[in-house]
Image (cartoon, rainbow, N blue to C red; front, top):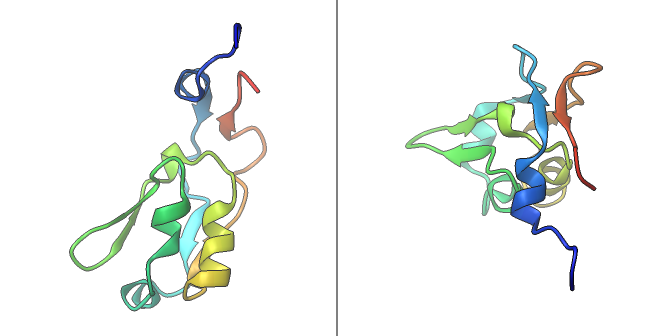
Length: 97
């Protein structure tokens, strides 16, 4: 189909105005260690979550703010993730639909 821009190219055009404070946190990091399947890692399209040897690392600067991680954690995980929108004007700024 002519005129379609690949998803990787569309996402590459997005801009980020990252707040110094993360909008993603954990109620109890120990819950992640026992989480079955770690669904936040699986569903995040921006690879914000990474399991390191003994803890979950969150790279909030890459967040696309889809909320998929929040839904996955609350429905399939251990309810550890606290997800809020970044302050007004911060976060991802989509350039192409």
